[in-house]
Image (cartoon, rainbow, N blue to C red; front, top):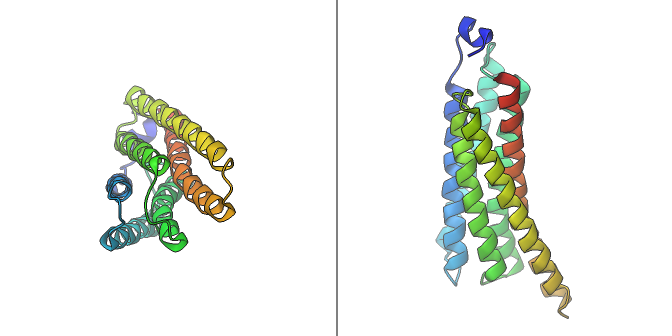
Length: 209
């Protein structure tokens, strides 16, 4: 524990809210996997995902509102704001992929979508663990292990996307190519944002430990 933490009472509300947001991400990723594996897409999944996205927005707004009212914060205000924003981006990508499928009339997930959904789920679980580690930055080793795993998962998602696009562009239906490319990319973007979360948390650990 540094001198700043000894001398200044720390506001734990931010950690509560970050953990709440990470929990929402895991729930959303679980729903995404269920959605992709369901064959037909039940309308209630879309509504559940919208509800989760709204819940995430509420948590993000609470973080910003609390930041505006708090003079002494456990992390730098810029770190809090950046982490809140990118956590919200992850949720937006998850929800956006389902909405994109609905708008494009993609009625059934394929193997690529299912693979990416599972990788997103694995990544959000690691984000959840890394986020919980922020309460005690002395656990830097455990956080670092989570960060490494998130980076590994993101690399796997890159590979899945690359192979999928290569196969897709060998087909002759331009409308189908456009639709699936966008859906695949939006799903892979969720793992990119998880990696951004991991990098932010890693930087926080380095600065404060």
